[in-house]
Image (tube, rainbow, N blue to C red; front, side):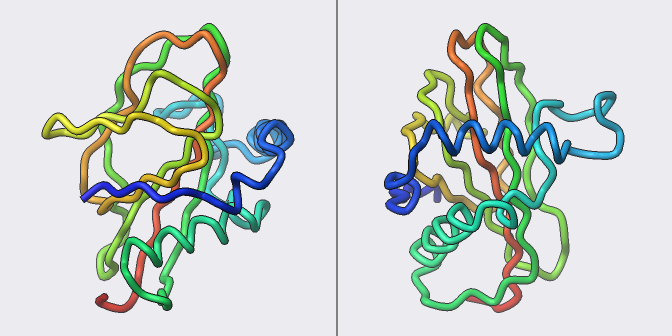
Length: 168
């Protein structure tokens, strides 16, 4: 149900440069109009990260095509954002799913851009052990949470939800 795909396109980039650009993007494009008093994790970007970083979108679409075993995806919507946790901070549990719109087959994904010992937890005792530059893809209805705990190094994670029009 949760599958891992290597991000060859991202692996060939200067990861430190991409991390720096993404942190700048988070400052320029905050998560929502309620920032910094929003109800969700605050250190995240708006939902159009893929429009700023085409390489992320291309890498993500390749992974979705592999997941769906098809060469064509009729996209209804795509939302891509980034979470940032600074060094020497604590990550708290926050269960959620990415279902947003009826009438679409919805799929979610994560990609860790930094090394971290804290992954993502799913109900049913499933855990993503994070590896840099890999997309982890699953059906959006699965409830998940960042693994809670303390991190010594900064943690940057790209997240995505996509709605597919056709019924693959």
